Amino acid sequence: MKCGNMENIMMRNRINRQSYVKYLMLNIPKCIFFIFDKKNHTYIHIHKYYILMISFFLYKDLNSRCNQLIDITCIDFFLQKKRFEIIYQYLSHEFHRRIFLKFFISELESVNSIINEFPNSSWYEREIWDLFGVYFIHNKYLKRIMLDYGFIGHPLRKDFPLTGFLEVAYSYFFSTVVHKKVNLSQSFRKFETVSNWSTLNSSFQGKAIKRK
Image (cartoon, rainbow, N blue to C red; front, side, top):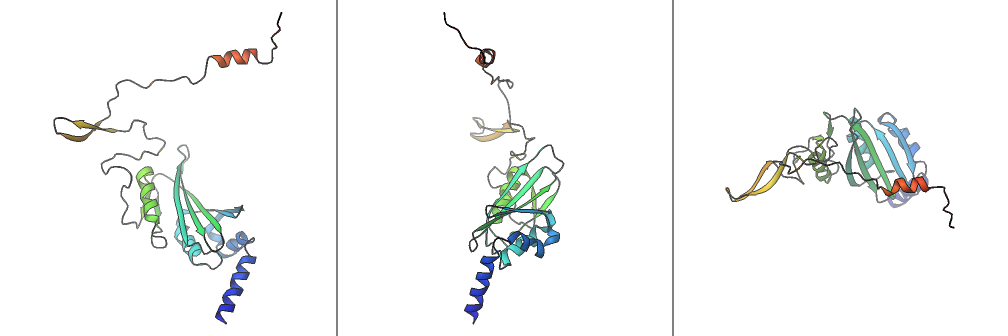
């Protein structure tokens, strides 16, 4: 009987695969701002406060079964008030479905960690903290993962200078590698990427050359 009930549930879930967007709207309507489905990928725009609730729902729900967190990424929109867009990508091996959760936060806002539901999220959260400076609450291992511990700033922010603040050099006095302030041998140059031949091509465009 139990095997038969599980088979019926699985068949019912496969039938409702096309109406998965409506299913989410009926179960968690207050948590969703905007949702759409494209090529078996579901995109959900939410508020940052609902990330724990929706992650737990996608992990435990029988019609979702998102048992793997693929990635957490961040995008910096420097000119917007809420400049950082956080994107969570979940995968359901059972239904062959990918779900993307998206929300925006400002520079001074923090995000709840989902390390209890998905332990591998600790690596992605540390990477975002290291490169973008987004703080994740309740992550005990939130420290730099790609850069040095003494590194200043977050290099993937759009307002981070191209040269950085410090450079690494070998000191003959201390006989070791030290950090020092960036010292440019010359100022930045403005390189013109437009070729001089492009003006000639535009002047001759549409004109036929007559041979004598």
